[in-house]
Structures are given as structure tokens and as C-alpha cells.
Length: 255
Length: 353
Image (cartoon, rainbow over all chains, first blue to last red; front, side, top):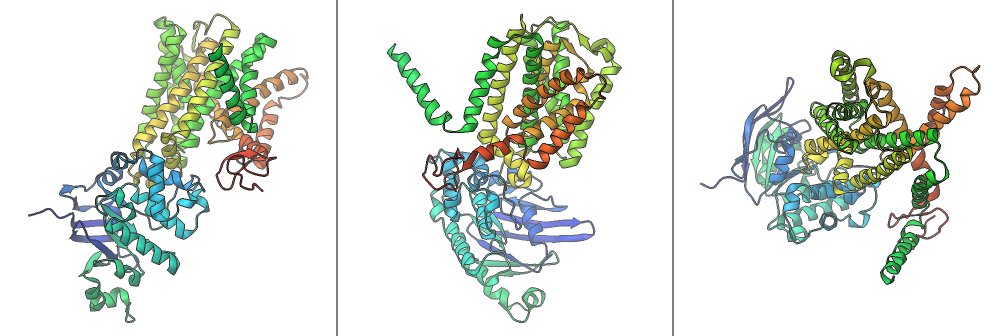
């Protein structure tokens, strides 16, 4: 039997007395985009941080492409092909935007790939162009608006050329127009569009998001977390009809 | 003749298009030329001694900036690297009879190893915790130095090292030349790809990790590089003073270097160098001047403190960045720096006001 692309089994993390993720198990395929939703404090961000190695789980296993990555260093995980963005953006504020992305391009993984662009600067510009902020490449990151900071986050993650991209609220704080643009970029990235010159195929994704209407347009599958436990897992249509999800998260109004 | 002419014309060309267009670059050029030409005008023993020590401390201050300014690893015990390298140099010179051009590089290697020893336990620490831990290391070492006087010379230190070079003027050229070369090297490091990662680690270490960069390696690299440059300074100091003693490990020296660097302007490399070149000779001048008035109380440190405080009050970024902002403007479009008097950018012709 073929190995699942990402397999999570019994992942458990406590913060003091608080259980952030409670024996979470699921797996996903190479070409999937998975939406991760749930009320605030449900453990979505914790789950993503566990996968990307920022936090270490108390119990449970994470397997990526058949390899156990549980408890590995963040940079090793990134270099294996899992990139993540932060919900509250963490740019290098006093550095120019291009330098922000160059840090990702200087990672061993990015240096090994894309032989045809030798120059780190050119690679960084490519990522910025994908994110649509290449015209501001020389500005300091501290001058960016919220929306552009989100784009910078995505550009930084994409520049490591991931096979699995973990996006933590990519639409958070964006205007409707910006949200549309971001959603389009994400869909394009998954297909291996503009940035696909570097990728053989676009990355699989896990997207945490509260803007469900937008999210449902790009994902094939949604996982719902509540109090650290998966309460539903299925296609977007099934999820919005699920009574448990409606009670815990969506409310009677629906999407 | 033809070849020489080509080189001459090329040099003049670079001067005209790259150096003379910016006041800061002109200032650096004037500084280098003045430093190199100085012994032609005066060979005063005491005067050269002050400038030699200034050069040595300039290397030391710049090395602190490399670690604490650029990488953000706030080091309150930077004298450790200086002192260890001074002792290593002194021991190699006195016990093994190695000449300065071997003992100083090996002393700097001692600085690198010290950087590793300090860096590894400090990897997990940040901010004030890191600062306090680094503060402890030289104090611990001072205790060890006093505990084994047969090796370290105890309170008196190790004296009688061989001279740096044969003459004072040669000493001067060696130290100021090394200061220029090492300062330029450090500046180049901070401008390189490694430098970008060091910058980024200061801004947000976690974000650098999620960019796939091994931050542990780069932080240790910063500690080692800083240890190396501070070590060269320590070795030069030992050979020049012909003494390596516990004074090289003092808390006062660690704080002195921070004051110099912050006064000149952190995260610039040239700032701390300029800071030392202003403050250190100034203190010597004050000493000479105040000695004329023996009735005055000891107000040298007071003047020093007031000067530093006032500077930082009005120029929080430090003296040199403040001056630089006054005499140069950054082009809003291409980010190239221009003389303040220009109205259009010299590269992209965008309006500057």
C-alpha cells in the first residue's frame, strides 16, 4: 500500500492543564487542499505548529512522505518540504522586503532546487512577483499594510519551495478584494501556475480560515476541530450540513 | 606606461563616480588617508600610543556590534573574548616563545573557541537573560585567573611579552592597518548573504527557523566571528602593552565597549569604530587638560557620561547614523543614497524632496 503523503496519528498536546489537541488523527494526499476550521481556541494553530515543528507534541506521530518527522527541528522539517505562515505576521521589520524573502531562498532546500535561477535575488523576486508585491521589493517591511504583510508571509513560505504548505489565516485582516486576489493566488499556486516554473507540481495545503465562503471555493476537504478534537471531516458540502458543526461553529445562520 | 595609465584612469574613474558622489564615502576616504599619513607629520610617542590603543579598541567595539548589534545576541561580557585572547597570546609568547605574528592569530583562535564555549549555553537564552549570563562569564574567568597564579600571574598578570614590532611607527601602521582591514571585513560580512540571515535572526528568530535556516549554526557562527575579531584586538593589546592581566576581563571594559558602540551607532560597524575614535582620544585629551588643574575634583567621567547621555538623548540611533541622515538622503524610488544638496536621484533621476 502506498504511504499517505501526510499522516498524523494520535497527536496530543497539553499546555499546562489545557488540552490543545486531543489525540488528533488524519491523513491527506499529495494533491489535496484541506481546510481546517473551528471556533477560536479549538487547537487549529497548535495543530499546524505541531506539524511544522515549532511545538513538540506530548504524544502521537507525524509522518511525512513515509518518514517520521515528530520532534524534528523546525528548519529540518522546512527543508524536507513543509512550509508554514504565521497567523500574526512576523516579518523582519527593519529589512527590505526582498531581504525578507531572501532568507527563505538561502535555506538549504531552496538553494538545492531551481538550478536555472542561480541568483538568490532573482529567486526572491520570483516569489515576490508570485505574491504580487514585487514592486515594493526595496521598501522596508515595516512600511507594509496588513494585506501586503500577508502576501509577504506567503512569499516567504513559497520561496522555500514546499510540497506541503500550512497557511494560518491567509485571509485574516484582508479586504474583500484582497481576499479574492489571495484566494486566486493560492489556487494558482496549487495548480503549479506562475510559480510552477520552480515546482514540478504545486504544493498540497492545509489552510486555517474563518472566511468560510472564500475557503470553500478553494478546498476539496474540510476538517473541523472543536476543543482539540476532530468533530467532522469531509467535503465542504457535507460539512455545512453537519448538525454538530453547525452547533459548535457555524451557528444557525449557516455560511 | 600604457598599462599604468589605464589603471590610473580607472582608479580616478571609480573615485569620481563611486566615492566623491557621497559625503560619507569622502569622509571614510579622508579618514583612511589621514590615518595613514599621520606619522609623516608627527611621531610623538604618546600621541601614537593613544591612536594605537584607539585602533585596537575600534576592532573590539566593531566585533561587539557584529554579535550584539547585527545578530541581536546582547553580550554584556564582551571583555571575555578580549581577555582570553590576551592571556592565550601572552602564554604562547612567554612559554613557547612564539613571535607576535603567530601568537596573535592563535590568540584569536582562542577567542573563537571561547565564542563556542559561551555560545552553546547561550543558544536558548534571549534578551536580558542572555545579557546577564554573558555578564557572568568574564567574572567567573577572573576568579579562575586568581585561583591559578602560577599559570596566569594572578593579580599582576603576565608581563614582559615581546614587542609588537620594532618601532612605535611600525606598531601604529600594523594596528591601524589591521583595524581598517578587519573593519572592512566585518562590514562586508554584514553586507553578505550570511549578514542577511544574522539581521533576520535579530528581528525574529522563529521566523528564520520557519524559513528553513538552521539558526543554531548561524548564532554560533556569530559568536565565533565576534570572538575572532575581539581576539585579534586582545592579542594586539597584550603585545602592545606587553602585559596580559585581569584588567582585560573587567566588567568596566565590557560596558565601555557597549558605550562606544551605542554612542557611534549600533548595527553599522563603522559607527562603533567612529565612536571609539571620538571618545577614546577625547578621554585622553581630557586627562591631559584636567591634569593642568589639580585643584579640580575628578570630573573626567562626569563629562564623559554627560556627553554620551546628551548625544543619545538627541540622536537615539547614535552619532554616525544621525550625521549620515543629515548629509545624505535616500532616494524614495531606488533606495540609493544621495548628497543632501541634490534634488534628483543620481541613479534613477527621481525627485528627492
